[in-house]
Length: 228
Image (cartoon, rainbow, N blue to C red; front, side, top):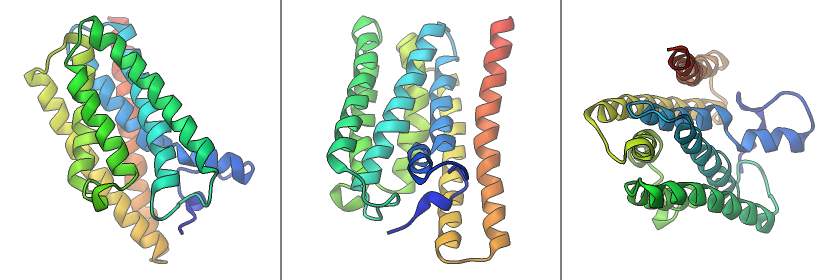
């Protein structure tokens, strides 16, 4: 069992319960994937309420539901032994909200969200519960579910289509996701393998740079868009 409360994205203040609650959300990683969904929604046909909707969907589905399932279903139990029933109920409730929001727009005029939502739902369970002997808990499928599909979903909720611009953004997000995952694995290998402290700090800086770079650039772009 790994104790992840010492990791860089977990607050250094507050009670252990508070720190675990925030840590479970993996906020920098959740923020990145949410931003990727926002990217897709800004390609064309921009309607603010749909951008907000896709951001909420991914924050709830990934930031809360997926990470809660990982906390109770993963082999390493990174946050210790948690009340499985309560967390499972909360995870399913959050997923239900996400699918209700997505379903509304899918039935309204964006049916392309149906196959994307089904795929993301599959990955959510297969990845975080390590189903099928962990075959979907790999870099390749992480890039698909974290990097590419969120951009496609953002575009689908706005225009029910995937344009060349969307594919280009998805390629960029895929590269960033792969860099994030590889760096994260190297970081965890050093951290839990009691590696060199300086090397760990280098990996943390890279993770922070990717996270903050994506989140801040997305925020700046939205601000510029609103002033036009």
